[in-house]
Image 1 (tube, protein in one colour):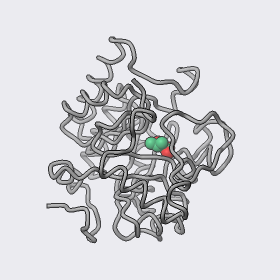
Image 2 (cartoon, rainbow, N blue to C red):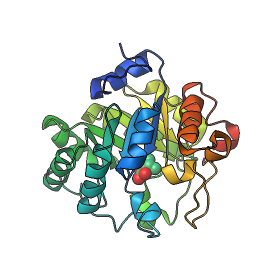
Image 3 (cartoon, rainbow, N blue to C red):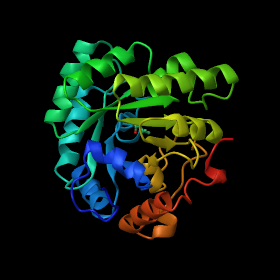
Amino acid sequence: MYTPDDRKPLTVPALAEARRSGHRLAMLTAYDAGFARVFDDNGVDLLLVGDSLGMVVQGHDSTLPVTVDDIAYHTACVARGVSRALLVADMPFQADATPERALDAATRLLQAGARMVKLEGAGHKLDVIRFLVEREIPVCAHLGLTPQSVLRLGGYKVQGRQDEAAEKLRADAKAVADAGAALLVLECVPSSLAQVITAESAIPTIGIGAGPHCDGQVLVLHDVLGLHSGHRRPKFVKDFLAEGGSVAGAVQAYVAAVRDGSFPDEAHSYQ
Ligand code: KIV
């Protein structure tokens, strides 16, 4: 059984054990070995080399310019700083457009040190998830606000507020788990919808702007440290450096707040 004090590396099967034992999973994005080491030493369960690096590291106004080379480079950097946390790498825009392309990209990311890849959406991505999982590549799905859909969505907006959209999200959440995903990120959805999806889900859910009822939470490193990228600050973001006093203190405060369920509160959730 997985316990929070476990110093053994967190494995993919241990994600389900963590959920069964009521251990809330704390996840942060990481892009280099130095921060990865601090996160790993201070109890962060999962590190994500997110394609958010396009915005917070490279300074673009979306994640669309990020390439497989970019994610592979940062994954290799982060992997050198990790001993316990489970390292997840994002599949960048269109790297998962077909099962074959996805297999090539995901293989590179696992060879760079990732233990799981994350990909956005359901629909035709269900075949991609199935194809990767059948080939021994663990997959984290990502639903709700999927930033790679920014052009179609017309901006970064809360998803699933209308009944029809909420029903579609519930169906998609079931479909990605049925396709073999082992973890599900829910981004920017009303708290009550994330609660229903989590209750129905066969796999652990990780929220970002999805309220307190998910099985874990993820935030972008720069947001936890109060570093503003020049883009509008979403409601769910919290500066933990202010209360933690140092980078390690901020990480400890974030992990403690995720574990005890005090983050996110209502002020950092969508109703
Ligand atoms: O790219 C990223 O950092 C992400 C998280 C915000 C979930 O996808």
